[in-house]
Length: 271
Image 1 (cartoon, helix red, strand yellow):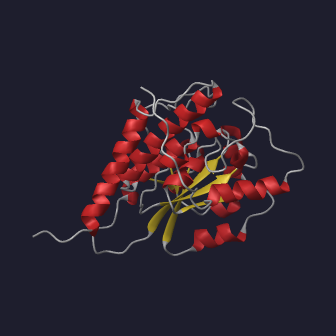
Image 2 (spheres, one colour):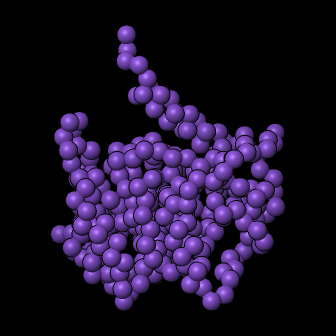
Image 3 (cartoon, helix red, strand yellow):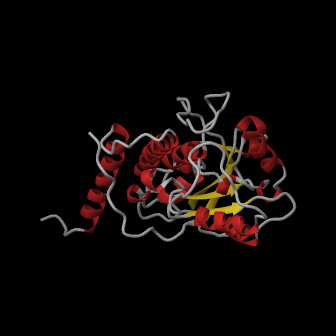
């Protein structure tokens, strides 16, 4: 059974990845043409064609953790980029374009901000053992005890680009490295990969959020990726959406759970 999408009266304010995309487009000498998928007009809020717009389903979940995206030059322009999804869900998401010869002063200021404990997320096999941290260091502080919030630095790029970014970013050399160990394979279907243990950026972020104790945000981001993938592929193949399929129902269920939890916290005290 097919249902029309709920109507969004207005888009949310542009987030960090959206702003980075706008800045990158302003520097372009010619229009960016995405490979594959539909051509023509795309929604400014979700990068999909209007008939498959995702904006009305955009979730936002409060988190203890933050995410910092270091994005390869063209990543903000790709409609299939999933760093955009992270910024949709996690309010404390920042995004910076990466360049070998210069670094944004705002990025250095963020890394030095005392409220954050930055972690570079990268495979431990390419790092000296002394820099690699375990997930136990990310456990939330006991209630009533202040502590630094984890800031996950994700290199949003192809694997060869990410390795180059890691090697040639000396301002990251003093930071601990979080090496993730997942017991499942990637479900990402929008770009080809020869290895199932290479995760897309939003899958990595969801794993990090789960380690930091932001369970609802991790689950929501995971479900949001599934819905985005469905919308993207259905638009590419010019197939109508089923707004009642399993992916949409899972995302709506998590959103209701989050709204219910917020209502309990904000409501009157128990009698």
